[in-house]
Image (tube, rainbow, N blue to C red; front, top):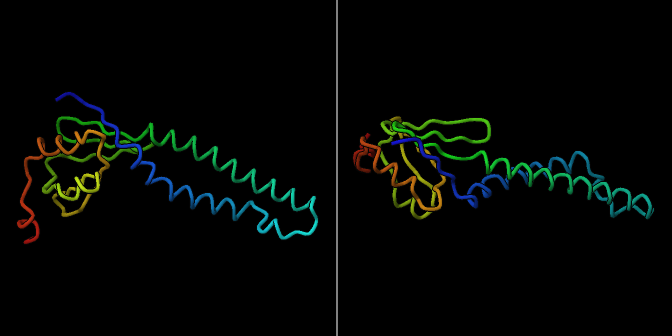
Length: 154
């Protein structure tokens, strides 16, 4: 098998990053905003503070859109002969097919997120691509798969 590149579903990737970016917005707004600008009696001062608030939120929104585009572009899987390399922004994680002992197909199909367990018993999640090729690749290449009953006994 030559190296193949797959992209996870964009909507799922966005769902992961939105809560983080909202927390960043709240932190930025808490640090740089005027807090309660609407309560000032002086119209000039109130308008100045409201403008500053709008600038903070606008700058965050522009930065969020740019960062989101970069994060989506830099989030992909490379399938090799022995495993999958998941690239996320500037880091990468390698999943070896020989270390996968169970694939939860029921969960995977329901949530469109591949749930598998490695030989250490750790549950790992990967967002599926549009055509669910990732699930097929795992089923074909993971030769150490066991039944759920066998795993629970351990």
